[in-house]
Image (cartoon, each protein chain N blue to C red):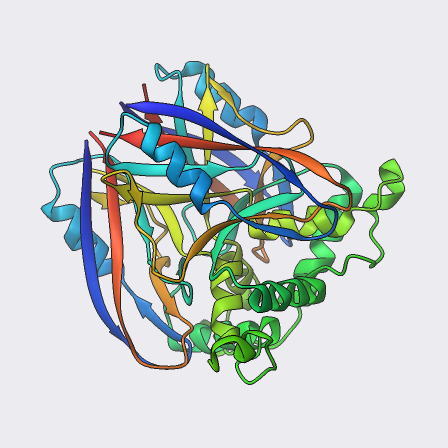
Amino acid sequence: MTEKHTIVLETKAGTDVIDITPNVLETLAKSKINSGIACIFVPGSTASISTLEYEPNLVKDLKRALEKIAPERGEYEHHKTWGDDNGSAHIRACLLKPGLSIPFEDKKLILGTWQQVVLMDFDTRDRERKIIVQIIGD
Amino acid sequence: MTEKHTIVLETKAGTDVIDITPNVLETLAKSKINSGIACIFVPGSTASISTLEYEPNLVKDLKRALEKIAPERGEYEHHKTWGDDNGSAHIRACLLKPGLSIPFEDKKLILGTWQQVVLMDFDTRDRERKIIVQIIGD
Amino acid sequence: MTEKHTIVLETKAGTDVIDITPNVLETLAKSKINSGIACIFVPGSTASISTLEYEPNLVKDLKRALEKIAPERGEYEHHKTWGDDNGSAHIRACLLKPGLSIPFEDKKLILGTWQQVVLMDFDTRDRERKIIVQIIGD
């Protein structure tokens, strides 16, 4: 069985890291599928999905690590193409990827105790994001 | 239902970034499965799959970011093992991973407008690559 | 069809990189599913799954690259939250992600000749890890 669900979220400019675990669990609760894989995917080329112990200090550490990899105020050739200023967001999203598949059982994600599912929106302006939760299983 | 499809591509030495969206869409068009997950996976330990706004300047920015993470002309212990020169390619591929699962509906990938599926071949010689598109769904 | 399997492993403090290919293949051999996707996922926020040519020199190179991205003895805000010392492990795991989906056929993973599935445990203490292999297919 396959089901497509959509989570809609407002995000803030800069690297906005949002705990979407409750949204994904709500989606699974509504689903007819008990066990399988949830493919969590954000359409767009400036955001990613991963997991993190979601606490404010670690979010700061994550932002600092990402600044080292692709600094927000760095120089990017991409800025010459469209006059955009979000080259860092594109690079971060390509490296961290737009999706993550997580196994679930009895409508619960199989996660560690200190592990939350996060949307990371790297874009340099506020956005509305649609996150797809494609559920496959029995 | 499960279907296995294969995309065959020639790649160039260095970090060759290729838009494979048309190939994946062609694969989905031929499939009997309408909706589900496409697990796009490149066998081999020196290439990765992700998504990117595929435009030449951003490809340059991506190559520069990868050079910072694992420089092509850096020193690698791996070079002592086989006399290879592609340590950077192995490290990049391990960090960026060989596969990406993308949801699809009505035989169309659920992507953003400016988001293409890319093969990144990090190897230091020309290669022929076989990319697996494992399709699961209804 | 969906099946959930579990691999249990002991890991060592520091970045312990373990070849889990034999464990995953053993899991597939026991399964009733012949072809599909294996979603290999480590619950917890300080470990990741990827693929690597598993040879000791390349493991050294990988550790060096990870040290550049998030140094084990660096300063992390997270250490102030719980008195932990594993901020580097959390950052590495978020960037490299906890899971990887790999296609399989005739109960064999579709991998390159020099490509092994690895668990990377970034934590700063010895751990017991449970790795979920969620198998979907026919």
